[in-house]
Image (cartoon, rainbow, N blue to C red):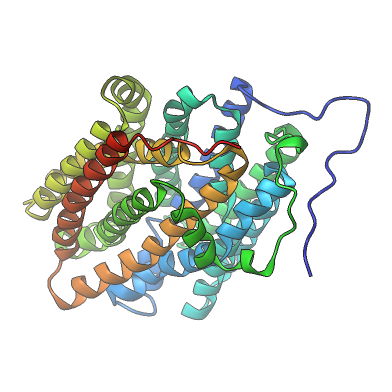
Amino acid sequence: MSLQTSPGLPDTGKQPQTAPENRNSLGLIFFIMLMDIIGITILSPVAPQIIMRYSTSALMVNMVPVIYSIGQFIATPFIGKLGDRLGRRPVLLVSLVGQALGYFIFAWGGSLTILFLGRLVGGITGGNLSTASAYIADVSKPGERSKNFAIISSAWSLGLILGPALGGLFGQFFLEAPAYVAAGITCVTVLLSIFLLPESLPVEKRVTTPIRLRDFNPIISIVDMARKPGLGALLVVSALFGFAFNAINSTAALFIIQKFSAQTWQVSFMLIMAGVFITFTNFFLVPRWVPRFGEKISAVAGLLGSALLNVVMFFAPFLGSFFVINTLASGTSAFIFPALTSLTAERVSSHEMGELMGVTSAVGSLMNIFGPIASGLVYDHVMMGSPFWMGAIILTFTAYMLNRTVTNLQHQGTPAKPEY
């Protein structure tokens, strides 16, 4: 049994509305992504306290992002392929509705099982950000992709400001309030997508082959994509970066709660400071430095800078110093994502972009699983703060591997995209 592609938009005598090279579409998808990321980050200040009602283990606290990422890993490659066949807009809508349902379940709570179920539902339908990434690729010229992919980092950075701020604010009323707010925000995003968002992938550019049973297997999708020239090593680099990033950040809030007795509003403030600096970096530094120095140098410098600052963070003598160092480390990481995304996007053709973004999201989801699990284990059984050391070592190795991979591709003259 196979699922055939959508026949496209009905014939109304007008051309289907698309958004190639359309600044208005980029602005709208940025706003939709921002609203979605606020919905995710609004839980950051309160999730540790909610989980600690039932368990004080760092591993159990980290299971909130882990369960969400398990759902993403299972679903996002298939969601990416659906976007290549049906268009980005309908897939985005279904994903957002599922996200809202997941937040309502988490807000209902009552036990670890219900909390984890809410995050699992949200993760399974959490293909909206990878679909939005494919949308940006659809409407961007090849030479503008690195700059436009910074939109994703900018949305994340602003979300890291507004989400934790709202989470800290509403969490003062009761801890579950931010989850209800997240559900409401996601419902608003659904309405915006229905009434304002045009389709970015014209019918003539969609994949026409039927979906097969193997398309539901995320491992097969990852392996198929990794076989493309030069792409496998870049996916490994992305995986290592994701592992280290999530390992460090998944226990940062718990670290300052236990070491400095930080309160909910202080956890929010830490995330807000990081978000402000990431926003500054994405809007003012990335557009200037990445085109000037190139994706390779920008990403390698970001990886090494982040590694160094995370070691320094471990030795922070008081909470204020930790905030400053964490803020700088967040800014260095802002160079990495748009550079890596641009490098990987150059390796595939346009009709594979949704699949690629689904695969990279699945790889990221795997690292969202393994990173927090590993950091929770070393945090519980080695020493408090040990994830900073583990992450710094991995980031340093990742910088070496990325430099070697891109240099080899340049020397080999491997074509950026296959010709069809």
